[in-house]
Length: 233
Length: 322
Image (cartoon, rainbow over all chains, first blue to last red; front, side, top):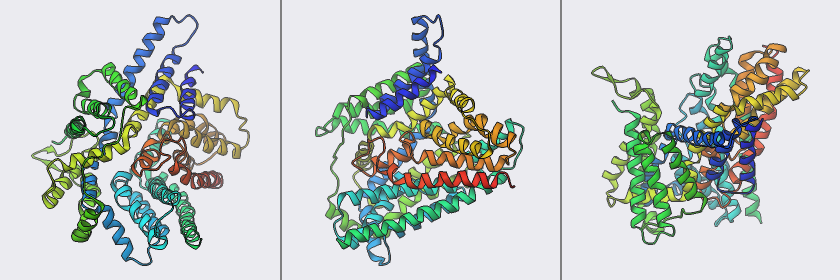
């Protein structure tokens, strides 16, 4: 059970608000060293385990480089911002009178969930869509009603813009039969002697997807009411 | 054939550009620390395959030391004023959206079409990570389009990119580091131990308790690991399959599908899912971006909690009926 020590390091590090990158690395080394703890282990063995863990972490970090490739979009997004991308997103919203923060976010939620359900999970994302387009639009809609936004409300709207992208993606993508999570389930069940077609799994993601839309949609409409109350003060 | 290595070289050169411009930026509050950070990341992308496992590990340690001692800062390279931006937006209109929308469109097209294209018998895309290759291609095309149209100073994309990259900071490699931590957890058998704990100490003698333990366990384990994919095999092998499916006769398709979705509820609540919950807070300049439960997570919590309860109810109501 010593290997669970690494999770303790993670929790303690997050609670103490130390730098997560450093906490992760320490947690990894603690986990690797704790895994070899047994009666009669010498300090030399522990040192070797620590080095092995650093190497294993380095190998995995190198194998997972593709995760950070997403930052390649920043030069383009930054360049377009230089020429007024966010301003244009705001101007567009200003022209549509019926546009409210909640409706804009709900429309994006539906688009994102449906496209994810067809496997188009890349139509969206925080660096590509939320920062340059969705968040400025959501803010601008509130500004047309309130003028200058109080800071707390502005941040709350931004957080909602980020959340919509996540929730719509998570509870849309599993309806697509060739998505990683469905294939993972299929592979796992096969290894345990249960053979299923991916669509047999994917259909059971639909009830939760509908509930996600209803619950989060209601909260987005509620967000409009909150913004309206701010205006009434 | 376009392979993943091409994309890594592109990324490596981009980060090397960020680093070089940071060194030259005398007004940068943390000039050398920031340059070293993006420079090391450039080394990782360009030469990671030649450094050896321990070499890559030491590189990550150096990144963590730079981040841990707060040696990274925010740059303010020369850019346009708000008035210039508004004028440019009024002048160029909705065409400004086009290059931004090209990225998802080409990326999707790449996966749907280009991935299957062969030229003289050689596939156009390498077999590894075709979606990432498509993303690299999409950025290249959109950037060339935008450069030809807007005719900015030649270094503008790197300067603007560096501005945004600095605002994300070390959080930008948090997802990659967490994935690596997940790999170490697998090697050390962390998941198996947690599964044993669940299976050994919980009295799951009614099918509702088994469903509840599985759904909560998926959410909790995902909360700890930051990734439902890491939690799924462990919790399903410990509780889902032996108890809910085998002992109580639940439909395995329903149990597993809803079990995975219960895990996603945990993803919405955890700072460990950095790419979903921490990176956007940094990208959107939220003031509490470094708090364990930042604004994004707090907004997601009510929906996550409601959906976890609904998933549990759905599994209990559906799995034993169909």
